[in-house]
Image (cartoon, rainbow, N blue to C red):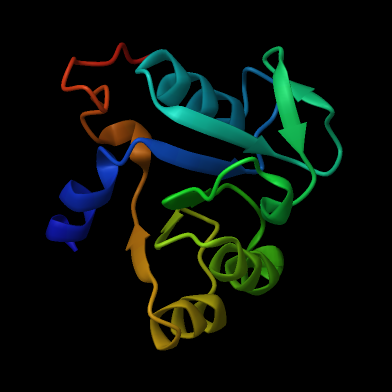
Length: 137
């Protein structure tokens, strides 16, 4: 998995499913950290119209471009549906934050050609896709 972490940690286009406006929630912290580091990052949350002043999308299928990585910050019971949606949207990898993992969703993703990372993106050295170090918040 370290190779997958390295491969995907600096991919420039991400979607954060479970992005939030609550600064105490990981969905907000992850979204802000990636955005501040210069990533193209899309907020996906069916209950929000905006996250941190940016448009929020109710589905991965509504994004203006396919994300390479879909970061999961949702309860495990939602994971399989979102992973299937991510595949349909053109994502290459699913990044499960701790607590979002679901064995069935992980098996499905791998069986359908997607890479799976189970780790917290906030503990990784987030860099700008242009090679400049990002600021951790």
